Every structure is written in C-alpha cells, then in structure tokens.
Image: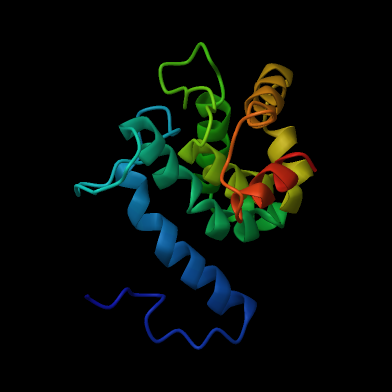
Length: 167
C-alpha cells in the first residue's frame, strides 16, 4: 500500500498532527461523494453481505470518526468548509423524501452498525451539527436513529449501537 501523505510517518504528538492525519484520511473521499453528499461509493467491488445503499452509507459514516474530532471547534469547521458537507450529507441521508435516503433500518441490518459513528459525531458536536441542520432534518435524524428500536439484532457488540443511538 502506498504511503498516505499527512498520515504515514505522522508523529501524532500535537493537535496539528491529529488534524493533519484526520484530513489525510477524509480528503481523498470527497471526489467519491454522491451529488448531495449522503453516500460515498469507492471505485472498488466488495464482497459485502448487504445492499449497495448500506455499503455507500458505510462509506459515508465510517469517516465520521475522523470528521467528528475536526468539527469539535467551530474554528476548525470554518478553516475547512468541506467539513460542513458531512452535515449536509447527514441531513440528506436521513430524509425519506430525498433520493439519497439511506433507507429504513430493518432487522439485523448493516445500517445499525453505521449509527455508531453518526451518534459519536452528534454526541461530540451537538451544537455544531444541530445548528447546521434544519428542524425538519433534526426530526428526520431522530426518526432514523430511532428506527433501530424494536428491531432484532445479533446478541453481540451491535447492542452498543442501539445504546449509543438512544443517548
């Protein structure tokens, strides 16, 4: 695997190092975002055992673990306006009337797994994320995350996703 500038060899000793590493991970994803930013489709085929929309949601949601820390200060968000595209993508992905809607969460559904990074982002940055969303988008987000309640899930770490989403 080729070295990734900003990540490979990064000493991870300062905030600037962390920002550089997180940016190095998420910046290459921007060209693979869907038109409204709610999905990321990487130009590779996977052997994933779930539908393509869930795979594209996974592509969007997993990088939130790097995006969330970058959003933790409004100054950082202002320095990189591309960060706000993740919030727009979140709003579109949970909108059942939007063409990039992620779909309802079903029983034993991969979408349950992706609620973890979304919840982490909300819990880390409630003021920044919620301020950037309309009231309708906030309502859609609550409804989408709540959609996992009452659904069957494996008796393993997936239970944590339900707990985190209900905080």
